[in-house]
Amino acid sequence: MLLASGAGRRFGGNKLLAQVDGVPLIRRAMAAVPPVLFARAAVCSPYPQILALAEAGGYLALRNGRAQEGISASVRLGLAAMEDLDGVLFAVCDQPFLTTESIKRLLNAFKESKNAICALSWQGRRGNPAVFPADLFPELAALTGDVGGGAVIRRLPERLILVEAASPRELADVDTSEDLEQ
Image (tube, rainbow, N blue to C red; front, side, top):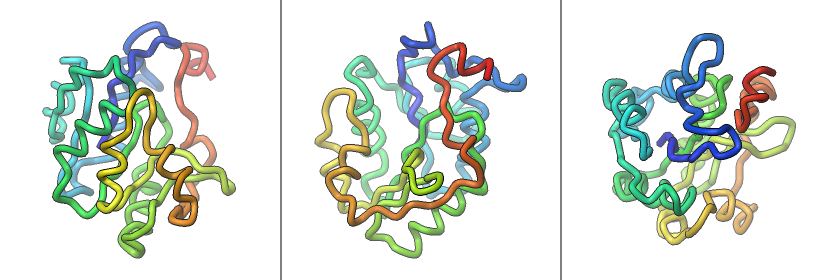
């Protein structure tokens, strides 16, 4: 599930249409996390243009009418559409250099150990995205405010498996317009 609901306050607006190497961040995210890898793939966003792109790309477009509540609103909305699955991958849309190869490694790690939370990392440092098993859906659905799955991971570190990214660049995210320039 791609989380595309952020207000982009530090960026100065909806950053998902900002381009890196001529490609908008949302399209880069959809290319890195293609729906063909999943039983069901969704994009959560309050932005009609983002939802239209998601739908055209084969994703379930979930309108987040509560985005102002923070990350937890996207998590709850997405989980409601995925509750019958064995697990859910949560990915943000502002990591322009994330690769499909790393996503596949992350999914394979989850398939090998379905009870674990699997997260992409670099040199032992956890990043995004992460896959959560179904038994943690109720805990994820109970999150409130601007809190995401990281809170669940911090509570259950013994269940975490880190999956090394191909490079540290994959974990870099865009928060400001200056980040785009780098």
